[in-house]
Length: 120
Image (cartoon, rainbow, N blue to C red; front, side, top):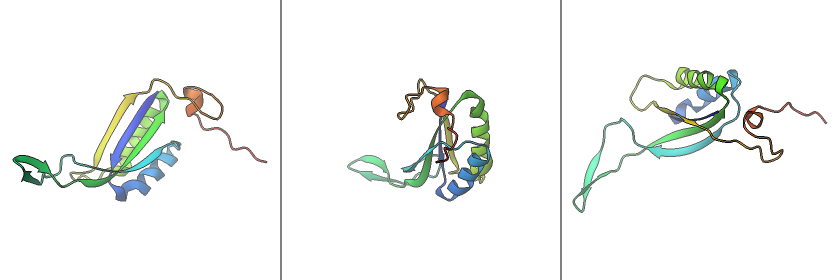
């Protein structure tokens, strides 16, 4: 299991979500974040210390996936988030030690697999 964190341009969110849903990756957490990466640095000095004052609005997606979905998820993000310009973002892939579905107590891959829709 892996936790895939992608930091992308806000204007790419809908395209990335569509690509992930098309790849059957539907579980994700979306956060609005600000950060600084490879863009040109704007510096000013405050009390003798240089300070970066230009942070860029980004979207962070956290996606927990089982091993078979790691490459699929990365490929979907790369294909939909890339503009080719500085500031497209990053993808971080980390080992995920344990996942627990709170409602049922299911663990690990069972907690990651979408449950079938129940009809009442």
